[in-house]
Length: 451
Image (cartoon, rainbow, N blue to C red):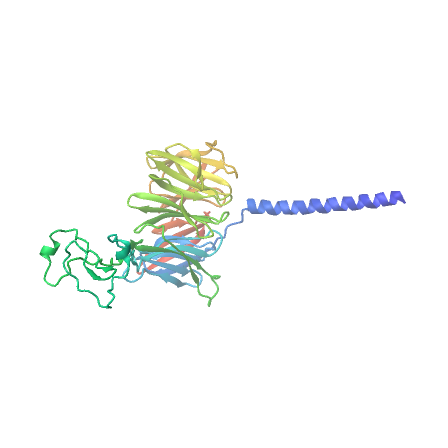
């Protein structure tokens, strides 16, 4: 009987351990998926469209490669490539200054949602506040106890004021006329007009008007969300999020970066030869994380760990840093090092001398980044980099491109791909090529996978 009981207990203990181990393994796999999400195959499309207009700038392709955002003569426009039609536009408000309207925009990396900033004039740049006067008790001449009593005569009539003689004149028993105080200005009585009082009355102070000057520019953050590109009826959802009072008037957004891992957004703002780095969290709190006199050259947010990498210059000293709020760690102190991009937990740096890319370096990211880490050398050579753009491909290729060709650096080799059209762009995931050709009053757009 005892053996049977022990056997039953051991069986249930084994089943319990198996269930616990299975639950632990499942939860551990889920945590790994959140901490290091798997690399999904990028979306690619083969589409073509003729967009009205020939002055298209700041071309950006959506996450699903079916919407194209661009600016035409200061107006933000979004074109549905599948339906071949314009689905959204936003111009500056009437009466806006030259640098107002949509300042910059960028697609979120994991959905068809466009984030943009819109500047407008502050309708109340000055606020006037009326401050009530502070009433103070006037200082009076001290009088005796008998004089402090009621000065109205016993007969009930008010005596006529006479020029003081220096002696009190009794009007009735126990009642005396108080001595009038001498004026501060001895010439006041002499200069007084006929009929004017010889003693000035205590004038009441006037209310004071205070002027409070605020930012003459209001900069608003919007979220523009699009339905599936095949949807014929649903309109874009243009949502106002908040107004950034910290945004300097006349400032321009040089760069935007998103961290979907930490739900943080970063902005590099330039105004009057100064740069400023702002951090905006999911609770819409804004804080400046750049330092005084610091020039922000480039920023990049890690897609896997949410680390912000900053290319910074202070007092002639240039560094590449990892930034966490106000905490900083040096990644590279090489004055020629530039941030190229980030993909799948790897940071890519380039060594650029005199507008020529001579080296590509890589750093495998960790949750606890070390100071001055060792960088791996991936490639050495010579590619003109002065006017080029760079993206990290879906297979961790480093893609350096201009209008006519793209250099694809992979496995230590450089492969050249010829590009067609007047302008060419590579999507942010490095998987799609956008080629633009101007034809009359239209711009022909061709999308094809970058191979």
